Structure formats: structure tokens, C-alpha cells
Length: 241
Figure 1 (cartoon, helix red, strand yellow):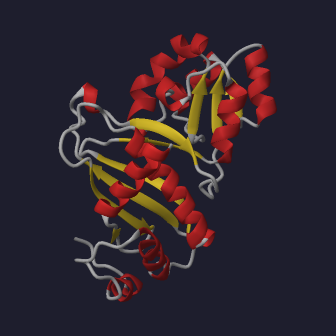
Figure 2: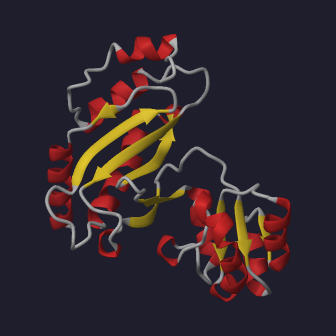
């Protein structure tokens, strides 16, 4: 295991590893330990009581964070005709057809963060599955990136739409903003993600669904949240909604 830096070592001394923090105090603790000399990204890591090997226990979706991610997202859109023009007017960084697919395949070009495609372009995009898939860039209807409403898709992504999905270890890793956002905005973003994941609970999931939630800045230690309180909060919220 690589040796941690002095700032990390100092930060971790202020964290109780055995404590499960309430949401607000967890964010406060995380911000107090974000000591890097750059605007660190804040991430949430949610371990769920499901088995990602089973199709009926998949958890995947996308939400627009109320305060965005703090990151400038480069959007590539596969579209033609009026839809290509619509994508350009909506602010897409790259718009094209087969020529962009060729550039990705032949030049190993990946100067983009999100790929959107209209359904009629999936014949072209489908051939890129082997290169886009492993990078998490393959368009998918469930995340709203395969759509004819390209204007909405581009605008939402530029505004801070993030995708969440289980990895092979049944954990969701998702950004919730930047250190510079401050406590209130990070909490707002985190609540939106937690609400979406709780509502996405598969019917086939048994036992405790939200097993652990940890938040951390890029260079800081993980802060564990009290999942019992979070579950009670969002289950109660769902009943009210």
C-alpha cells in the first residue's frame, strides 16, 4: 500500500473511523479534511445489498444535480440532419455521424466525457461498444443518452446530470460536487442522489438495501454515514411523495 502524505495523515487523525456520521456532520468532517491545494472533487460511494450479477437486481439511472458537478463536461452527439443542428444549438461540443466513429476507432480519440446518440444512429454507435463500453461511455436509453430529444439531453448534461450504476462489487461511485461548493450545496446534491438510488431499489432486493455510504474528497479520507438514519429519512420521504 502506498504511503499517505502528511496532509492525509493529519486529516485522518480528526476522523473517528468507528463512528457513523449524520449527513450534515459527515459533510462538515469531509470538508475539514479536504486540504489539497486544488478544488477537490467530492464523491459518494454507496454499497448496496443487491447482486449485480442478476439482471433483476441492477441499479442504474441518472439525475440532474441541483448545483451541478463543478466540472465542464464535453458532450459528443451522434446525430444527423435537423437533430445534428439541434445538438449544436444546445451546446454539444462535437456532433457528427460515421466520421466521428471512425475517428474514435482509428485515432483512439476520446476528447469527450459523455456520448449521446439518436436511436437511428445506434447502428453506427453500436460498432463502438468494445471501445466505449469499458470506459462507461456507451449511450444507453436508461440514462437518457439514447434519445431523439437531443436538446434536452445536452442541456441536462451540461447542467450537471450524472449517471449512477452498480459496479461488479455492488458499489455505486458518483460525484456530488467540488470542495468549493460548500456544505449546503454538497448536501443538496447528495440528497438528490440518495433519493434516486433509494427509489431505484429493485423488487428482487432482499434484506438491507443501503449497506454503507461513504463520502470523500479526492485526497481526503472516507467519512462513513449512518445508513439507518438515511434509510428512515428517504423511506419516510417516499411515503410523503
